[in-house]
Structure formats: C-alpha cells, structure tokens
Length: 113
Image: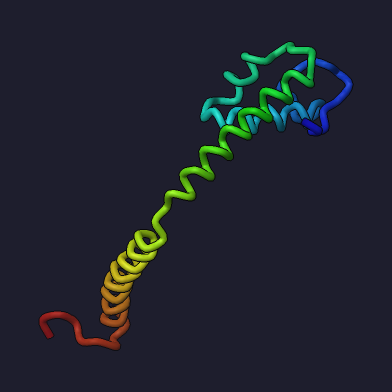
C-alpha cells in the first residue's frame, strides 16, 4: 500500500512518466498471467491510487498465500529423487558427447576401427 506513485491521479501504463503506477500494473499483469494492455484497460483512468494499490496488494497477498501453501506441500524426498535422476541422465548424455568429441579429435578410436 505504500508503493510510490505520482501526483497525476490517473492509472495509465506509462513507464517514463508514471513509473510507480506502471510497475504496479506490471505486477498485477504478471500475477494475473495476462497481457499488460488488458490489465491497463481494466484500470485505465482510475483516479484513486489508494483503491488501485489495495487491488494490487490483495492480488499479491492471494498469490503469496497460494504459493506458500503449495510450497509447504512439496515433498523434499521427491525433489531430491528427481534431482538425482536428472543428474544420472545428464551424466549419461554428457559422457556420450564427450566420447564423440574424443573420437573426433583422435583421443579415442572411431567406431568400426
């Protein structure tokens, strides 16, 4: 709610002349997963920054609540297992590539030789 705005008292996406308001529009656009022009059109011309800031603050709060809820349900063991499986797969691919390069520069015999 204490985000810096300006004295224009008009919500518009104008990063040069209204960087604070434009930043709030960008945040809202990202949280809603919608193009900036759609977000701007919804609030364009709104002349009460306090009301607009409250809308953005509520969206941020909702996002953080949902994110924290999803984060708390993450299974650490499942993540570690996935990372280990990815490491194994990457090592297999990296070793194949390394072997091919070594063959190309003559450090390993080429297949069929």
